[in-house]
Image (cartoon, rainbow, N blue to C red):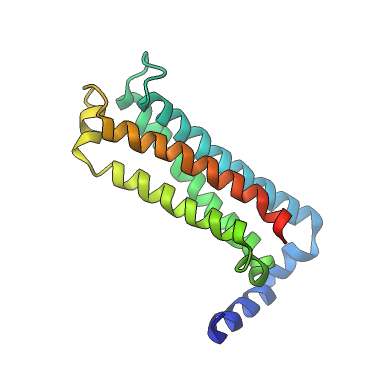
Length: 162
């Protein structure tokens, strides 16, 4: 690990918020619960939309489901980033070498890129307009489900690989 990064991570772990969460079981458990709830918002909303793109829930239009589910996912991502950073700050040196943590972060980045990338395509616009869902959109939806399931699994493994 580069010395400057190690110095930054040590300073992060000594910051007041990190010390507060490290020293308070109740605060840490509450923060962890906020993080898990945030992940539930993300995965619940994204997988619901992905399943619709794959052909389930056809009685609901994609155009009516996508906006609220996307907002719920975005809210979940915001709170997951904030709570995740605070959880990370408690033991940053340990997390940066934990393969499950690194896998989770990588998968979350891929999941966000997949979602943002999909929404910039003409195929996404076709799906929103009520036309048959293009195969590329279905592929992105399946990829999304697999990525987010992998991120959740990796997240659960973090504690086992410490």
